[in-house]
Picture 1 (cartoon, rainbow, N blue to C red):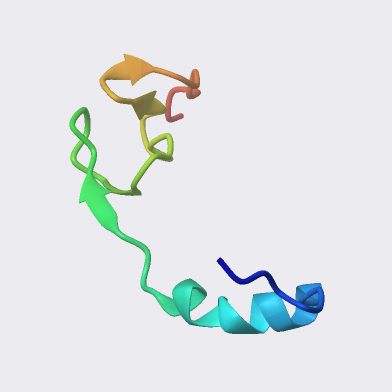
Picture 2: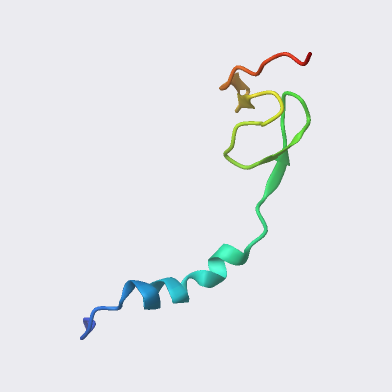
Length: 61
């Protein structure tokens, strides 16, 4: 199998990968409070992630 003759610079490599970053982030509904949340992130409203409390949120005053 052929091997590359020259090292591809980080700039060239990253230019090739730029089209992947233009996607709109996927949003889901929090199973605990129903707020919109990015995938694989803790809910900013209630602090839950995958049904478990991840961050203790202060009560509203």
